[in-house]
Structures are given as structure tokens and as C-alpha cells.
Image: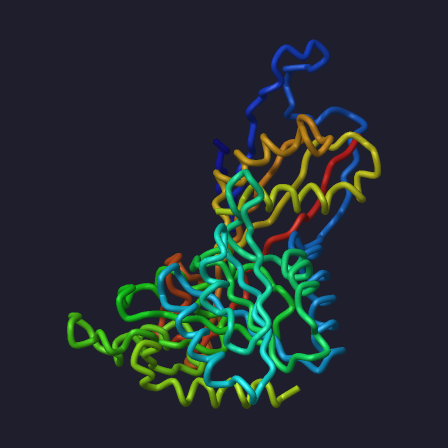
Length: 259
Length: 111
């Protein structure tokens, strides 16, 4: 597609030069190298995520005005986010008022799993009819917040779309990011998806009850996370058996109390 | 993976600066640590620009290599791997990213 040029300073440029203008008779297919006389260069220097980031700040302000702390929970598909959340809502019911923004490309299957556990659930399908978005962004979460009674809540958990790439790029107004990384995913994932692994404050290493059946161990997983993120809290858990879930609940209690 | 929506965001950044004038060139800086695929971004731009009233606007990508400053050994170096931000000299992960996370519109040419 683009033509790449490497410059002396190490930077590379791609010039996209395809001309797909159909039979437009007014369009000149001449030499563009001079960019014609009379063109004016305008300095912009504006981040492409600035619109999302300003909407994220509005969400964050809405959380703070209601005394809420918000956590953005990310992972690959099938890592156990929803199972962890279901157990978490059961454990914290009656203690913390929790709201969940449930992001899914399609279906309300996850939202249904979280119903009836004492939390408010706001479902957000990202499918707009043309294939779903691969992540939640700040405007989407803003719409979902309309489905929650914010003054009644202490903690909001945004369950992002299962994906190790795109969600890491979008601030949704959270105060911390966490991710679930299960031992069945392969220990190379932090090296393959460093942007997400670097962005989080907490990593839950899930499905540790399966380790006896795998050619790996929890220490290897921890070491690989540490390779890209030396500072994150790392908690090995099994949402299925409940092993290690206590320290995760304590982390959430402390996080929520920090408001 | 989401280059189509990124192109819409690029057009959203450009539009107020163009203020109705014809956009000839849009220059975007992309750091190596951003999860943006340049070829995909260029392709998506050809789809998006017509719908954003910027027909024919050329997208110029400036790819910025990643550099880290190591807190362990104190040295600054360029990182070659896309998959690790560890210091290439001492292998420490305790680094500050100096360059490589850019994603911005630097300038536009209008007529």
C-alpha cells in the first residue's frame, strides 16, 4: 500500500499514493511532487486520541463526583474474566455497591451470568451492524453509565471486550487497569502484547488449578509478566476453585477505599 | 485492528485546522510501540477520506523508532524488537520509554 522511505535520522515515511477517483474528470493525475503552489502548511501537533481522552476525563469526573472508583478489566477471550467477576460480585455483595459495564461484541450471555448477584449491570454491545468494535472507548462507556445509578455505587468495573491489543490503547475514564491472564494462554503473551501488559496495575494469573495438566508453572508466568512490567501487582488465582481469590478481593477493597 | 476508527479520529483532528479549505496532505507520526499497522492505516485512509470531505488528501506516515532509558544501567538505547521494551544492553525491564509511543497529527497542507 504505502511506499516507505528511510531517512538519515532513522525515521521512516510512508506515502500513500493510490488514486482511486473513478472517472472524476476534474481530478488531475499529474505530478504531485511539488504539492502545487499556494498550499499552506499548518502545524497541528495534536494527539489522535485527544477526543477519546477528553471524553474519558468526563467519565472520570462523573465517577469522582459520585465517590466511585473505576477499574478497567481487560484480557484475551476465554481467560475467565466473567467467571472471576461473578465470584467477585458474590463475595462483595452487601459490602461494596458494585456496578459493571459489560462490554461484548454481541449477545447478553456475559451480562446474564452476572445478573442476580447484587450488582448493577449495564450491557454494552459494540456490534453496530457492521461488525463489532474490538474495544470499549470512552464515548461507549459514557453511554453505558446512563444505565447505572451512579450515586448508589462505590465501585465500577468495566469488563472490556476480550482482546489483548486494542483495549490497551483507549482510556475509558478508569482509575486503574487490571487484566486476567490465564495459564492456558502460553507464557509468551506478555512479550507478544507488551502494550497491554505494560499498561496494567494488576495482573490476575487465572486457572492455576490447571497447572498440573500443563507443561508450565505459575513462576514462569510471573517471570514473563515481570519482564515487561516490573511494578504491577501479580495475583495467582483460580476462579473455579476459589484459590487465591481472597487477596484479589482485598486488592479491590483497598482500591475502592482509596477514593 | 481498529485502523478504520483511527482514520476517523485523524479526520476529526484535521477538520477544525483545515477550516473548510482543501486538505492536500496529512502528516501523522506513529511510534513503533503503538499497535498501529501502517499499511492498514494507509489503506483505511483511502476509504475514509472521501466520506470525511477530504478527497485526495494524502496521508504521510512518519514512523518513529522506540528508545528506552534504562533505570538499571542508566543508558539510553534504541530497541529493535517489537515485542520487548527491555533494555537491550542489560536486559532490565525497569525502563522509561523515551520515544516510540507517539501517535499524533503533526501538520497538514491545505489550499
